Length: 365
Image (cartoon, rainbow, N blue to C red; front, side):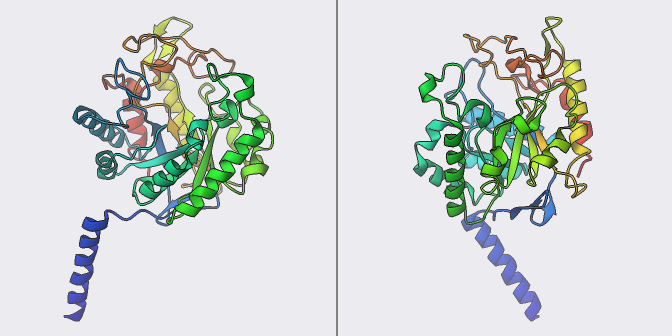
């Protein structure tokens, strides 16, 4: 009888605590090459998520910042489609703090790679970063924090087209200092000790030349690395290359193919499907959740839906191809057709790759 009363009291306490304080955060930690969530190896099956309204640009058109009721309906449908396809993680480029969206993330059991300081401007307001940590450290959807996005390429967005004069561009040591200081800020503010990641861009095939001194300099501040790779239909030797770079695990922060072929000047969703399926299959075959000797946590495919504001298009209500062509770039034509990366079109019509990845992912645990 005592045991029954105790059990009922415990259940009542847990229920009241959840109502008053919300759902408890997960325990997330890096152990060896694995990412553990509540002690269980986590396989990141992710997709990048940056939903911008048709005809609008960022930041005002980003649905997750100040969502209307209509936006919330779109976002919930997005989360349903993402979950139904077998994805368990989204990577965003602005933090999600809106209470209703956070609730939807929990409803659809999606984890979030939380961007903390992607650009130099964010670094100028450390108080807002502290507030962000205070809010999101308690969220069950928070998987880990992420500092920077391709910062070894854009130097926290001070070194790219339209960024200003050369004198305003951050140097390597400045970037290292930002990572160190933001990491310390997170360690101090996050009572739940979520891991800290940072995202870099693979600039060439020789990983040791990605960025001079990146690993020795910041390894003590970082728990895991995101690497953005766009190069055909395979990652080649890059998983093995990373083993010689760092003892920390890594994940593919971005990868994927476009649904437009610049060589033929036509939309090509079938080639996009072919490449995405090969790339995600290769990731799943090399994740540390299946084999702790592997170094890869998983990856985030770029991206869920088309963004018509990209590609240098002066009219964001028009879908336009074209972009930067590089030696190693997204399949099928090595061109960053930024408005054609979506698993779904801007009206959420799924492309073939959505269904192929769903068949691949839904049975992966």
